[in-house]
Length: 483
Image (tube, rainbow, N blue to C red; front, side):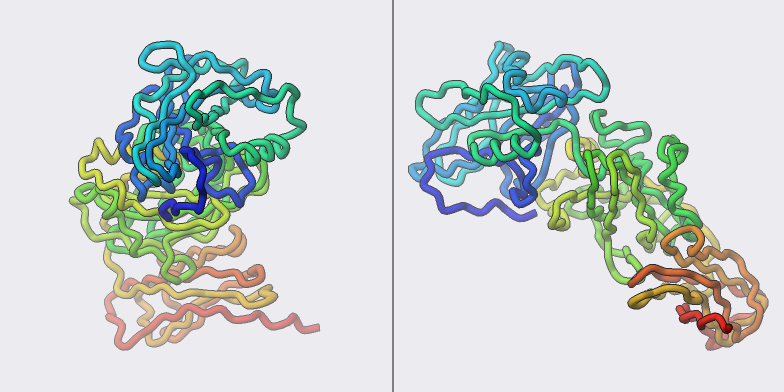
């Protein structure tokens, strides 16, 4: 994550950001308003670590209970010393546009009823966070569809007073966004994570506090063979299943499908980065981006796209991961979601926790993260294995995808996986007998324009070892039908 850079400003103020990326035009997701659920922050010092300033930390709030609320900022006062007061308000999602419904009750600080906290800085460009935090008890809403927004106002003056809000409702969310943008003292947090949401455990809702459990049902391992129909992972039965797809074929290429639900109110595009580690090397800075490929090229991320709210997305073309050989040190997969318009791989360097409890707390405090402990499975080692990229050209259309054999003994078997854009055009063949030492075996497929995938091939010999043999994946245009 990029560090915050000092802006040219003479303002005597502490700045609480309205958005991580102001170019998005959305000002209801401040990264500097931080809720940590019913427990205080595991590591509040990380809020003001410059290397962690590009991270969101907020947990889902628990209604009817006390939730810890922190606020952080950067001091731009040229003389250095600055004390600012931050006022808190809240409102339900169905009343967000009506400022007369914004409430200041339900907040305490050190046990006393109070809806403000203090930020104190002693030097220019100092990162600061409130200490102690406020505790906020939002009432239980009237229905499960009602959620909460947290609103703040920073008064940097020597004699702070609560803000005066507009007396008439905003016409729509765009009007509210414009108002927030015009009032830099203001910041708003939608307390529900919005974007592509990967669960940390089966049954978790976006409104359910995370636990850091290593049981994500949305990191789906199909093993050494691709899934014949990746869209099956988006069905209600599959999404709501408590069964994990966590068995990995050790020392082989495995197919990994990433699943997420769209928690925004409209279309969404998100990038999901994958990492792996082992149980004995759990510190986040040591998480590996290696051994992943996408469509045959080195890449540890996939893009997910949803057209509508509530849609379950899946990476139709999976990542392929070369799993380690160990059975004594369980591998762990980690996913990080970036919902921004300009996604960047995360920087874990600020979170050098080394014990399992600390790392679990770190994952629990970040809704962008989920992870899954894998069960390693030893399978017979194939005689030959390879992966080749396959790419459709401009216009794409129909073709034959297959394999060209050369000097391959007929008493062996071939397995092939070529993920396609849908089930009808995905090739999954296991244990196929070799029809001829130099056969060309293919299947008709229809690919969209510039579609990219890869073919993963394994060959297991019979009684005859291959001598100078090869198996090559090919994509051949289908000739026009004769008339």
